[in-house]
Image (cartoon, rainbow, N blue to C red; front, top):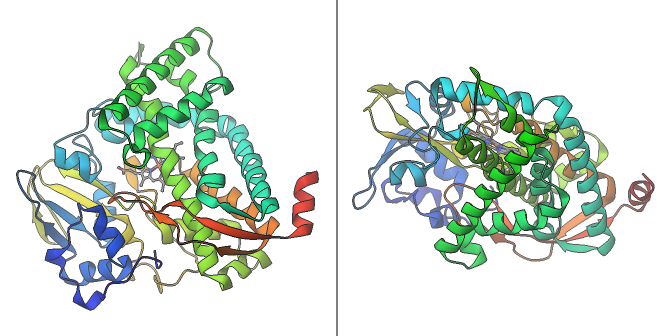
Length: 420
Ligand code: HEM
């Protein structure tokens, strides 16, 4: 976060900031911008142009938590990110966990929670550890790499494929579709091509679910395909949208956390030394990377009834956005929030949200960052940036799609890893 281009924070006019424009997040230095919001207009009305409605912007930790906590007053069913909220809704509403509320949300979440039980996750996490170690080892042996493309990109998708039980032979195809479906802009393709890829993904999961219904195994697709609620199976749409949601939820967020984690370790050599020396635990380092990076910058809701937040009246139907990237730097909760401190405790960041929609993949996301930090501290003595990196263009996610680095090997750690 501290690495964003700097604008003079004293000159920020909050009414001139356009939080729907990805460019804003590249031009502004975020911690001072959010400090200004918290101090001057903690429950801020953000107008939009044309026919789109405006929306509320929450930047204080306590207000963000209050909205996350209460899905009766603030629903996700009209969308849970600015883009869909402003468009008026999400096509997966009422079927996909993240945009479903009420009884159905609890029922499907309970099913998925069972499918995320330690018994299922144990081999998946072991796979994360082995894959990450191998990728980092190869990069260190070469001495230089694009940490985004050569290392981080290969971890979360493979993890989700393990979790879903996608056969090895289909993974290349799935990866191509996911890339086309999710990053139309970067891949330089049309919106139509991206829609086609999305449909093919849904069809792929419909087929896989049918196979698993006939012959279930210990994976998430089998769990969804064979589950019943009050004697009724899930609908095909519920099954495929929820498979798809794990890709949506689990790929980019984890990838960006790892890439930014690498970058911040380079930018903060004293913290890197603490991690290498074992002065801080890898567990607390994982939490500070998550707080500092805040890969999912915001989520949002719609108010169902007239209500109030921090003394400001909110009308039924209003869009409310919770800025994790602001809450995680709120000095009412975090001592010296602008200091990157891998030993920070307590560290109750909101990077995984809070309450009924708390991230289902938090355990896995943490395991991925843990595996990366462990591999780096074992096999690398020094790391340097060899180019500026390419920041992604988004008002929702924060991070880099390219990060060229050089890595100096720790020969003893490398040798241990080769023989392990
Ligand atoms: C929900 C962040 C990794 C699957 C969420 C939410 C946040 C979040 C903030 C709450 C959304 C809301 O309240 O509207 C992150 C971050 C991750 C990560 C920062 C990585 C560092 C994962 C992974 C998976 C996953 C690895 C799956 C394998 C989900 C799902 C939900 C969710 C299914 C919806 C839960 C519900 O609505 O009940 N995530 N996530 N996430 N996440 Fe994650």
